[in-house]
Image (cartoon, rainbow, N blue to C red; front, side):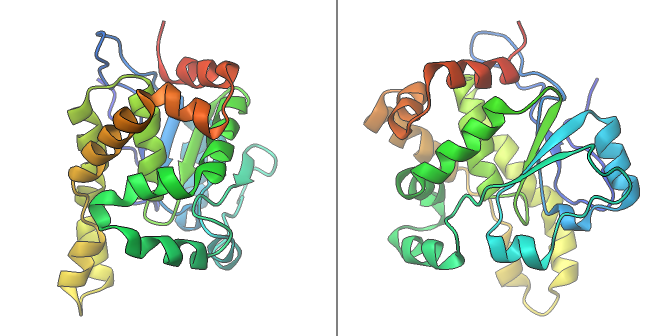
Length: 239
């Protein structure tokens, strides 16, 4: 049996979106879409493991300052990976600081869906248009920015809600001990940092249903074309 959690040294929070059961009994496709934390930590051995796994496209969701300060180095295989930097939360952290007070952490996904539609459209279009091979998208911890994209994709594939919740919550298990070791002086704040409340997923799905009817309705509203939605579904689902 394939494992969704993957080991690409020195990443902390990387997994395959394959193997998730859908409401109609199908399963999401393996080695097609991956979510991860900051690839600046990737060692040459990790990069080779990533290539061996079939990843060919990397989409960086971090702010430009993060990408400039901690770049994703291509160590041994220049040209083997197609890299795109597409910041999900605006061109600077100031854009997110203006939105963050509008709701608690449990509303994070809803806030992104409401206030960063052009950015989200661009990310999803890039995933749909990516060349053959696996697509890996990541932020810093691989939890929230990465998590909202993963949750939206899994929901588009009609994966069971509790499976999406478990996928999001897996980040807490992956990050808890490394983050506590990295920030030993403030364990309470550290645990809050890695907290993945299930309400975040439930609120997102309820918001989409109430405002747009379904996931496709939301994607049409933010500007995706039918052909792009179909390509996303083809990346997500086995025949």
